[in-house]
Length: 369
Image 1 (cartoon, helix red, strand yellow):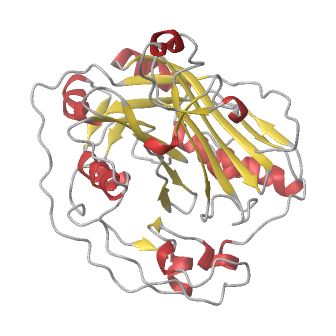
Image 2 (tube, rainbow, N blue to C red):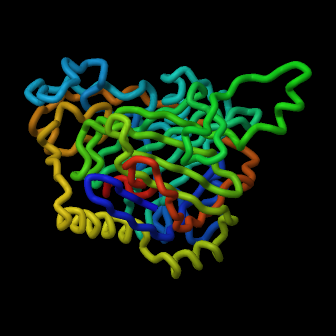
């Protein structure tokens, strides 16, 4: 569900389905499923290179910014940095592990679950994919939403242990409390009063051109619950304390089988193409409503820390070439078991009345803000 509150109201909700893939199970899924392949053409195909290109240079790294205020458009962005060393040709699991390490999180042999839509008939478009990272004890220790705009630029956001919280409802930040370890005699009695499973909550400046109807002075507010039998994700857009837009993605898990994939294909054909078509359709409706429009090139230097910059940025301020880094040895896995990969079916949700104009939904449609 996607709902805009200001400056003009706009709302829509669609049913979709997504893959929830344990990255350690990719080879086993490739062998077992007829309609899904890894690094090969199929109805549904998964390619490592479609995700988290940390071996490439980032555009306009924040630490090199000369100014963060409006009106700094005439300051050229700093040259792109080289990617994370050793990730230029590594597996996606190796890249996410290295990415977490740069943020002080040691995955230490844990697993990574990716919620995404792979290529369908060779076509790919993911407004947002989500990585949920678990340690060896099975605890979710980090979440990484990876946002992609219609220019095919990509930007990951890190939510780590400091962003964990309990919340009765992902969409209700007023009922969230930071997680604190509980020990002693009161621990058992307190355990029964924990309001809900752990989720990750963080508000962070966007600095990314997601939609022509959202300016750069917007913060993403992530509320992400690790997937289980059900999925509950929410991304809001804030300007100051005002929520301008909310995007939610909810659904239930089903086993990942050829029969389920075939049924989804008939029920939701060519999902990525449908998604990008709807993005442009709703963009037209917003334009007809005279919602203010912002050009991508107008604030090029306020677009930071992104991968695969569009040629309009490179043409305006060409960064120097970067060294992608050394070759890393992909990790190997034996005795693979398909225990954690699923299909997730989303369902439209109804947003509750909000006390002030707040954010529209970004779940699966971040490019239509």
